[in-house]
Amino acid sequence: MLRIIISVPARLDLREHFDYLADRNYDKALAFFDAARQTFADLARMPTMGSPYPSTQERLKNLRKWHVKGFKRYLIFYRSQADTIEIVRVLYGAQDIKTLLGRTP
Image 1 (cartoon, one colour):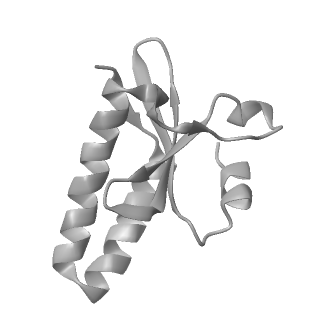
Image 2 (cartoon, one colour):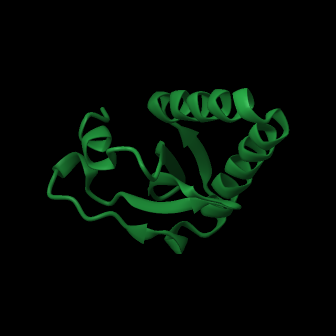
């Protein structure tokens, strides 16, 4: 299994989604957080599970995407290396994904 690295923007994304869901349904927010962590672990075991994210930007090269298990509208953007998987962003499908990824360091 690959070592999981969660970027600062991805951590902020998770917090934002958790807070949004918790304002409406705290149990659902907890389920989302647990599902995200489980999906990260699944990706660490099978990094090719997601599909390539097409981009002409060099810094987004080799980026892949997959959904949070049980929360299909929440997308995980990640990159796998020889011994790690980097969670780059966790975005809601209705967000302006292209713009948000373009601003990702």
